[in-house]
Image (cartoon, rainbow, N blue to C red):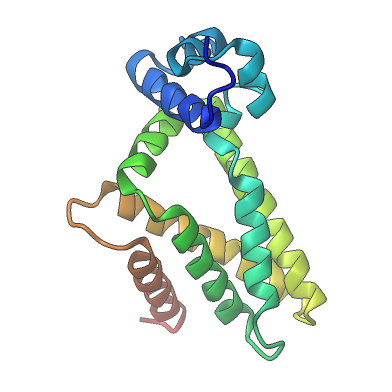
Length: 188
């Protein structure tokens, strides 16, 4: 097996997603993923803690980029505007390949444990955002509301984006969703 060939992580991600779509998440074993990727199961575990992490391994990097975007903003930026800026960063990070996002989302939505894992990752991002907003001097309630609102906007926009028949940019869909939320909050 070519366990020392470069690109093993990407091959493992591609193999896992293909197998999850073909067989289902529960029916796919780590050995199957490794074999399809042309590596050993031991190599798989060098990249991922378990077969779920193949779908979620970018979460930490996404959180880091999100918090870095927040840090770049002026301290006078309102909580909701700060979250909107973070959502722009999230869109640039995850919005590059809609077909891949569709496949990943299909796998996640077909499995209750994966849906739960997705919610846990989003909750972690929300908590980190709220904490960082508080550190910037935003009140506790406002920070929590802004962070949770941002996650809700992201979830709605992401769902709209992956299921759309038209070719839209995720950033545009997030902006439109946030604008609709603002109109709703204003009584419209």
